[in-house]
Length: 121
Image 1 (cartoon, one colour):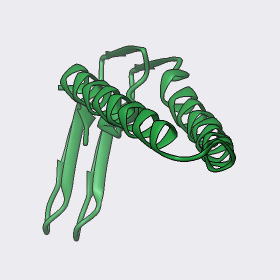
Image 2: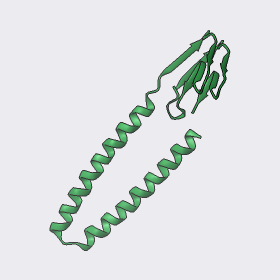
Image 3: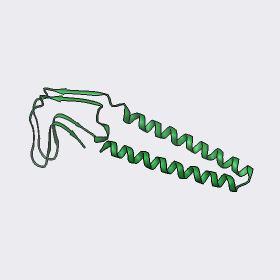
Image 4: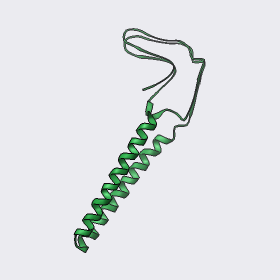
């Protein structure tokens, strides 16, 4: 699913960039020279800032590293908590390499949640 989201985001970004380019060309062709220069400067500045924001956001998602979890023992929880005997992480921030072995039992009661092994949300 992560790949599908990535492809969809790339597709949307590509469409928006193409539409923006078309709008920019039309505006530059229909305005006088002074206005065209000002518009081009503003668009370039906005594009540069957007590019930096996008690069910073993507850099955090790509540096996920490696995680190894082994021989964790048992975990128990009551009243709405989460018992984790293994690995629990966000689906959008899973490590590049994940090795989970020999996890213990995880027990939950009273509305709690139990994870034995790997769970991503």
